[in-house]
Length: 423
Ligand code: AMP
Ligand code: GLY
Image (cartoon, rainbow, N blue to C red; front, side, top):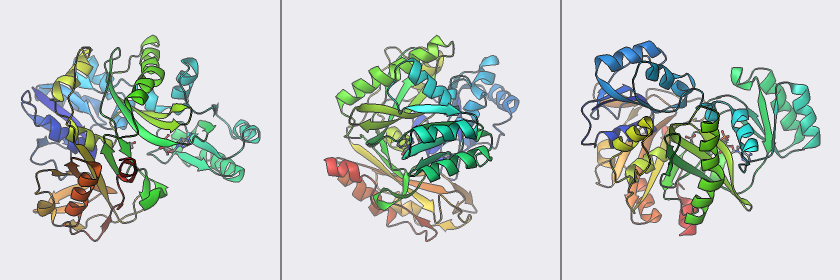
């Protein structure tokens, strides 16, 4: 079967790598992909915001399944438009992707289905939002309701910061995403990323993973898309997985079904493991990046039948097997990320770094030009290694990084520290 994969990040490189191993695959098309995916499929610069163009491409190239990596095309309704033309896709409908597209939508589901989450309020004007701060003072979290490219969350330590964030939001700092706000309780604990595949009825948990959101060592500095991840996450015990499925995931799947908008795809729950049990911080309608890189590395089963079963509504009875080894991925980002950064610097040494059998380098913001690999994004490379323990996997990843010659980039030096501490 032919598959069209949409996206260009490290997440999509890992998906392409895994899909390309499937014996069921005919041709893999990738729109647009990045500099690391050249040998995995046929790259096309199809405009994915033009849904009619995607439909025509799928029809012309006999595509049996479209796999949608990032959230923006989901929230824009690409899955719905493909379905209307009889094209199967992996990724939720526009209505179901509201679980990521509107924080208020998700919070209301939590309220109605008794799903543990931070106490909250929803506001569409500054005056009522500010009144809430008078009643529930800082520390408190202010969130733009819509998609804000990961920048719409302000952790306010003081009431002054909270009030300023409210003004910023309603003054248009987050564009349309900030037309509404959610204000919520600041939760304490350890964060974990929890993923399930669901066809709207059945939910199948994937392996566990943890991300590192802050830019610098010791979890300091600004929040980023994620600077590194590992799987499994020892903090997610069997008991916690069971509790998360029962208290958070299953009621959400039911809620979406009850609304007549069943959620089909991968559902990513950002959890806070509090002393009162796991609480939902937020949902994403897609795989995590860089969590996907470690999940795909550890997945032993063919992913294609599972993706198809999600899209077809036949997930019941599907099982996935995972390698026992730990996988770790370290993100190399352009100097300055998550703020402003330069584009166009050359990266050398990738072949030597990626040579060991248990090291894979997934690209994100790169392109190939005249035989060179150039950095063209914020997060640029994901150095991924497997080992019999998180410590061994970590050593292999950093050993590979030492062979990469890219002065314009940086990485955290402590990816995996929580799991190592727990081992
Ligand atoms: P989000 O975009 O909702 O995932 O938020 C980004 C990050 O902000 C999360 O990964 C957490 O580190 C932090 N965060 C968001 N909401 C809360 C909360 N209610 N309490 C504590 N931390 C939070
Ligand atoms: N790694 C966090 C995310 O994908 O949102």
